[in-house]
Length: 452
Image (cartoon, rainbow, N blue to C red):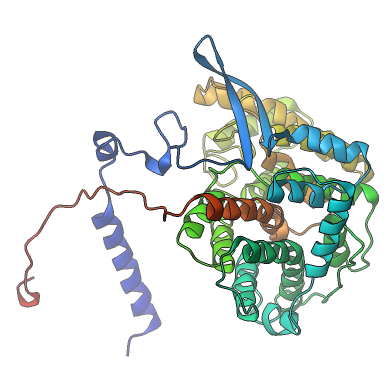
């Protein structure tokens, strides 16, 4: 019988074999003009489809030359800044209104919006004993895994789980949009209770409240929150709701949808993509980086000391030694990320309510110094700016949202965009997405076991 130590030694040796025998010469990618990561040599994504859900603008063509410009994000043709401004001026919560826009390609009338809110409230319930039998069983610190488990299990309760007609998929998507916050919060409380010996709170959502209000109500022991807190969270959810068709989790949604599979499998696949640290986990890294900075820098108000720490980050001499200033730079935006700029307009107000003005000053300093240091150290001239992750983790921490829920917060918002893209794929494309891979292996003669 194999012992544990022997087993792990064997796994270690086999892993080394995987790496040694599985490497592909990087020059072959250039030789055969293969775009690694579906990106060309300039970092532009390979065109893989068409969409009317959203649009990102980061460049303008001036005199035939591609020139970086302030980033702009559009949902169904509407500038995200204008959508946020409309919610603020109207003193209303906008998550449901913008979700309606993304799903149905139009801004709702008052009557349409009220009916949509009532429909979401009607969907905002889990099957009988689901919380006890599914969420509380085998809780995990990784709430994204818990969400995937919950969503896949919900398929067992759906008599029409495999029906991919637009009407049925819309029903399923609206139900998942409504219940995702519940499943995330309940999964966290189960983990906090069973794994960290904390108290258990299972508060029911209020059908009269918005998604943002209900999230804070269910998360907090006393169910209390301020109007500013709920409005800032609502705005954060809107900003994270959608971001073009080319991001990893949305592309996953298109790929998996094209196979003809059900909604539950599709959303679980998108979740699995989003939980990767290269996609949805960056806001946690920003918070952890700031914590490390506060430990290593004696005076966080001294720009010279903070700048020295940032240079150490880039030289792989600080924090996780990955050579990154987290929250800085974006695959598409260069001059500015419009989501980060909208975020910042609310962050200062919230930091004053939470008495964290010093933290806001530090974040603002890093936002100003970071691009300068990166361009000097990396010789990058296209422009670098703070991205949406830079401020979102700070916002969530001020809202007393535990770090285990940072990436699930992203999912709670982005499921709206995934749903819109899933429906778009079902309506417009009837072919399975099947990219080509060129084989670069050599043929070999088979050798019998006794002669190897």
